[in-house]
Length: 264
Image (tube, rainbow, N blue to C red):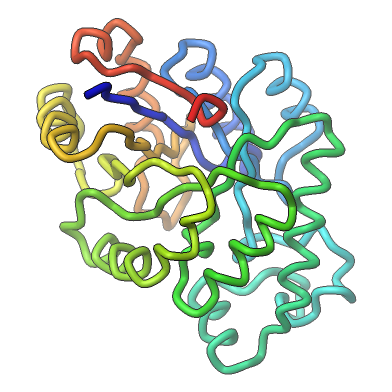
């Protein structure tokens, strides 16, 4: 059985430190795909990304920063300062009927269109805080992505769920799995950096070997950067340093073929 691995770097556009790390790892061929935050990314970063000819996806974001859309067109998604609600408040407001679905679709369409207008071909989609697999909301979001012509998507099913955050994500993805069946996607998410506080080649290899006993194609989710984000549980700098130590030869020795979302 062929072992396939997509290494995706999330959050391209979030900051200069995130962008610098991702561009470096793409050049090293350690990262095979990345997903762009339309409401954060600069045109300068997009130009640099285009030169790398990488597999670039859409990182749907409805829970951080400001919308791409005219605030008057997405009123239910933003607070009095014009910022998106946090993922917790977004989900809470949605379950209370305070979110207008038309506003969601409008912002999704405008984010996708913004990326396309920059000359990037969208290879796949995932989402900030995994909102495309939130219960009750997932079907509408995935249908909206489908309407935008997106055919490949992240399967948020974490293949290791030893922390409360990952247990919650496991529950969410199980509840909403049927909504991604019309998309091509890996069989699960290798969330190595989300559940381990220290990284080592031996542990990384051990966990990969266990996963490929059950799965043939998985995605390694990464969030590399040259600096950490205050208040985040992610250690982006450690991820970056670890990924810099890997290579195509490293994976070849494990009989793992690195692919990007365009090749899925």
